[in-house]
Amino acid sequence: MTKEKLLKKDLFGEVWVLTSQDGRAIVRDTAPAPGWTRWLARALLRREARVLRAVSGIADVPRIERVARDRLERAYIDGAPMQEARPEDPAFFRAAARLLRRLHAANVVHNDLAKEPNILVQPSGRPAFIDFQLAWAAPRRNALFRLLAYEDLRHLLKHKRTYCPQELTARERQILSNPSLPSRAFRRTVKPLYLLITRRLLGWSDREGAADRGRLP
Image 1 (cartoon, rainbow, N blue to C red):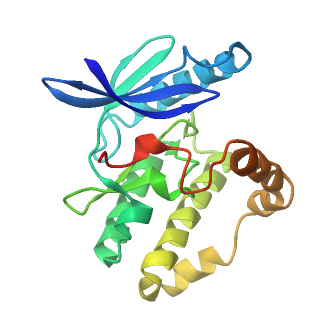
Image 2: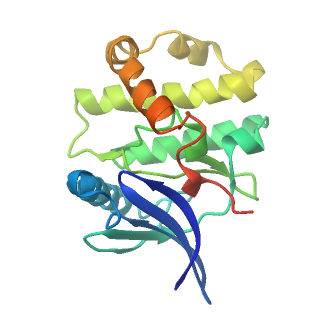
């Protein structure tokens, strides 16, 4: 396979689109990461590999192809990031909710659905979830798992409120108005520091910093 396009380069390495006669793939390479962050980059890569194995039977999530100490290769999913596609069809959000339930049934929480680029609109109109670097394959469905699953759902509903607000049910509005206690604490304490690092130092926003998530030109 040959490198077609560099999609992202940060403190955790590089993300490339690879091409071959069989098509495209995405590779996350931690070898270029600085020495002081490479250990964390490798830990996140191993974590992502565990999660992708746990969801290997679920459609519309990346399929793991190969994994090594510094490289994780996954299948390419064609689609436009949510902020570009701007899905307004209620069927899209019903399908996204079903996909999220399948993840949770596999004891996996995504943990990063707040970012619109992590949700793709495929050419068929189906949703796809990508970038499982922060996801968690839980050994059991304990209180922490249920809390994180609730936050997954709440973040998905926030996107529905943005693009398809007229379709929100009373129950969904109630969920949106009731973030979990850790979520409220995060917004007051950790989030300001997170925004300082990602937006001011790294130049990211919630819709950026992850160019491996969208359709190639």
